Image (spheres, rainbow, N blue to C red):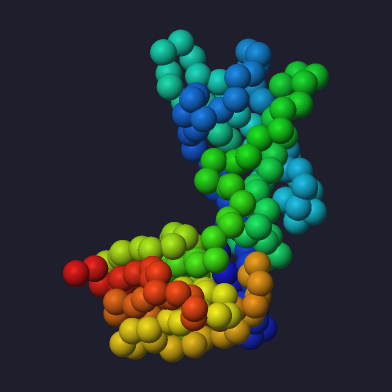
Length: 195
């Protein structure tokens, strides 16, 4: 996600550590009772407390139950998209490195966002929805594209210029928009208010 702080858009992470995770997405562990989930890497810099506890499935259950140790009510600014959301799973004396589901590092040059809940015409949070081409029923989308890309369509406006992985701009889109490299005819299509 992106958050607007003191007039500057910053990369951020909003992490929900409450719910269930499929046993197929969880690494094989020998835990009989529970597993501690502890942040590591950049996540540990921003959130030094234990994140959650995971309880294994009973019998035929298909999911691990995740209980938060820390309620994350606000995004964590300063978590770059180029980093994976890395945690350690502490199973008795063993530690297993793991990437949080959906927390893989982003490597796209084109990121599509929607305004966060409760945001009006001038949002202060933007939620990442896709990398590359995207269609949505949202009336307005936002796209970050690196410098050297043409962004063409009705209702396109530059919101801000700032780097994600490299220098680029954040655009507001109100209709079908195409994003193309300056030196190529290959184009990606972004649709606000899907046809």
